[in-house]
Length: 75
Image 1 (cartoon, rainbow, N blue to C red):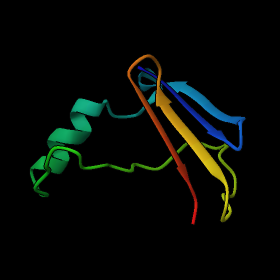
Image 2: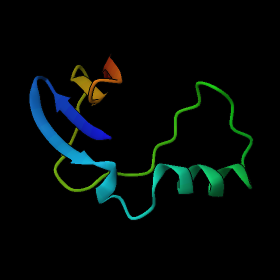
Image 3: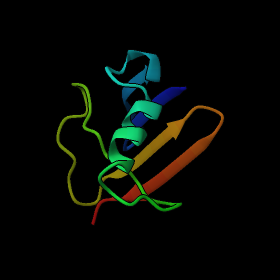
Image 4: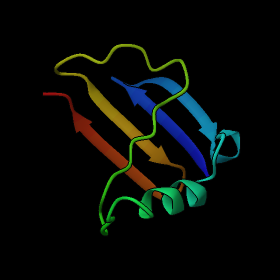
């Protein structure tokens, strides 16, 4: 899966799940052993360098290429 993050239209990150230390499946299995997970839950695992500071009013676009697009404004 290809992951991308833009802040105010500027590409801040572009990478692949293949670059992660643990696969998404491994993360879910480990978490599910201790935390009840439900459909729609978001899991934040941290991020590689490059995102930088995000400020109030910034528009964030996060995507898994050809699968999911998430857009929100920092309030």
